Length: 382
Image (cartoon, rainbow, N blue to C red):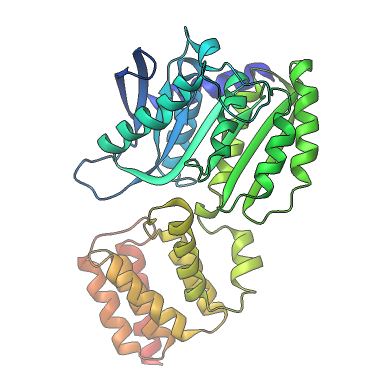
């Protein structure tokens, strides 16, 4: 089993080579020296585009960057999560000094606020100034780093919206203070924590205790998830926790699934079209950027509109698709579908014919357009 997860991590690291990796050195006056950064940009990243991307800050980037960046690249390729900008901080020679913790677990001290301020005052402004970053930011840490990321929760307005805590080495009183803080958060926050059956015993006991207290929190603004992996240790749990956390954090972003279609769209009081609009508006609110309408979701909403015999919803969808994809066969296909369902076969036939001159999509090509034309022509004869 351990070999299996090792192979997965190696695969993701190899896949990551296809993305744009940048190595930078940032001169820090807060730390009195230089810090090396690893930066991964999305495959389709362009300085000329208006698109912005969630930012992921990875502590211990010397060993944690590749597993995170590989997962991001892989899942974004399949549209399971959005493209993200990933920044790893190399701490191979400085991690103990960086992660010196205050004994009360509430605030950083004079000794270690240099690294804390480095992220807040130097790193984040640098990344925001040079790259197209959205307002949605994630921070990831492992053991000492996983404890350290909690300090950003104690800010009046936390700059990070999602926290991935992998086998945290929790300082005294952090559990109680963390429970108190998460209970009163006023903005939507994702918090993921993981341990494993073969995790370090000294850490595992505190983590289990922490999970019990965090699970008791009643705060609709908090999205909390915990994993206790079997057949994993302090290090291998990282390879399993990262994709689980990303999957949870970007749950709202995912394409419409069969379960969502059956359990939410078909049973919703809203029309299928209104459901789609709300879904994309919620994504923009949560993640700070607008997701491009994808064909999977168009198909699902069209199917639901037909199943619920909601012609108005189908018409609105067809208009939206025409606006978003004017040069694609999608625009002609769904407008033709609307006219066909509305009983205007002549207009439907004209739309399907016009689609032959447009660009094919992921699912719609000339063969499908011709099939629809023949179907309508046969219907017009009867």
